Length: 115
Image 1 (tube, one colour):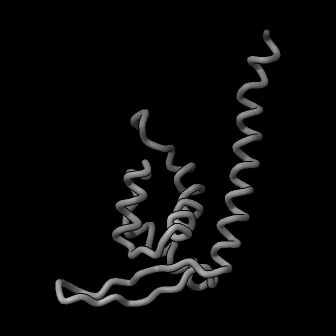
Image 2 (spheres, helix red, strand yellow):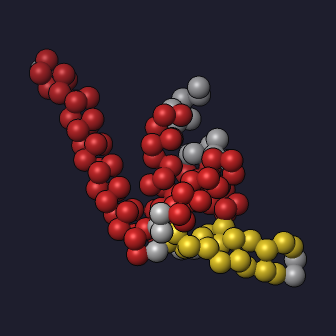
């Protein structure tokens, strides 16, 4: 694994929050989500990972979709966050911050103890 790539276990844990966070900013179709996730550092994200996640979100009432059609090509499913999705994103974000704080404390504790 290259230094600039995330550990796959971390990606698996962080991807749902990342997707909900992107959709909290604006609706997006799957390809746009994959591209944005890759730009953020989720380099190996593919449709085979994203679309089942979006389906689970939709089944749970966290996202909805609408079909957008244009003359240039096939229709696209555009996903939007629901109020339940926003609440889930907020709760997941708070939990992620708590875990991050704990891990940061653990990683700095030995340094402080030896000084």
